[in-house]
Structures are given as structure tokens and as C-alpha cells.
Length: 214
Image (cartoon, rainbow, N blue to C red; front, side, top):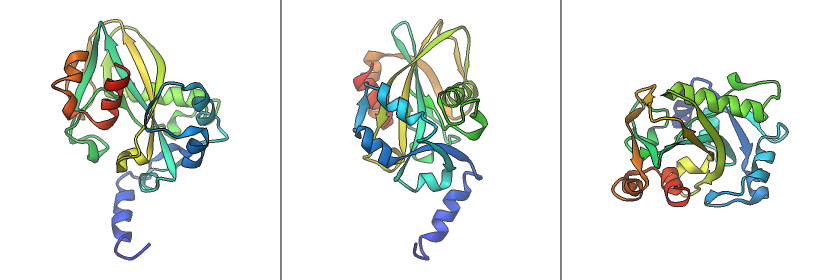
């Protein structure tokens, strides 16, 4: 590391206040079969990714700068009667590189606070999913949740260090409110609008989901 780059990286790492997040080595992803975009054959990937022998917690500041690791990110889509939840990422969001972009996905990192009886395994992962949703959305009524795809985008700096696990939430009703300022203009939108006038403003992961899954 040269002296010019060191202060910038140190500052970037300090922004996360020592947060630790769940990662896998990129090498494992490539062994399983790397892809660009959407992968709907998720079973063998998930078995390996959620195997405690293959994942571990890592300093987020380091992980954000090192594409030799993939951060595991649940990315939840919410559906009710033919419409999908859409929002605009506000400035208070954790990922500054995505501010002002439209999104159909709610998600975040898996942290040590999510650990359950199976350290770094399936129960820990699912606990992290529920925590993230509870932090970001206020949902009335029941819902069903299933994993429908994996997401990868190595074409940009954000995507290079993340691997998305796409969850589809089927909601009992459309009574959903934002739980934080980072989710602005929250509203259910039709597939036609997401593929039409809203498409150009969508973040990359959301475009993949709209094009391939919706």
C-alpha cells in the first residue's frame, strides 16, 4: 500500500465503526460457479454458503475494499396482489454509492448479533434477514418468505464485494411503512411501471430482479 492511498482507506474503514459482517471467499463462489446477474438454481449455492465451515465474520471496512471476499446480503422483494414495493434510497442509507437510486429490494448485512445455535449457519442467516426487515419496515399482517434467486454483479465496485440472496415476501396486505429515513417514497408499483418509467432509475440489483423475476 502506498502512502497516498493509506489515509483514504483508513478513513473508509473507520466509517463502519468496527462493524463485522458475514462473508465467503470469492474463491468458493467461483468453485460453485460464478455468474453475472440472476441465478435461480440456488440449492447447491446456499448449502455451501451457509455451511459454517465456509463463511466467517470480517471487518466491514476491509471487506468493502477487498473483492477477494463476497459479503452475503439478503435482498428481500415484497409482493401483494400483482404489485411490488418500491422506494428511493435516501442519503441516510449505509451505502452512499446507491443514494437516490430506485430499489425493489430491502436488505443488509449479517452481523455477529444474529448468531444462533448454529454459528454462521442457516439459523444465523435467517435471524439476520428478519432483523434487517424489522429495522427497515413496519409490516402489518402476516407474510410468507422464500428464497428465489441469487444475485451477482461484478461490473461495478459495489457489486464486486457483494453476493445477494433474493427473498420473495408474499404479503397478506399492503400496509407497509418505512422504518427509517433511508427508505423514501415507499409505494407499491405495478410490474408494468417497474419495467417502464421507473426502470431507468433502478439500482443494478433491482434491474436484474425486475427483468428476470418480476
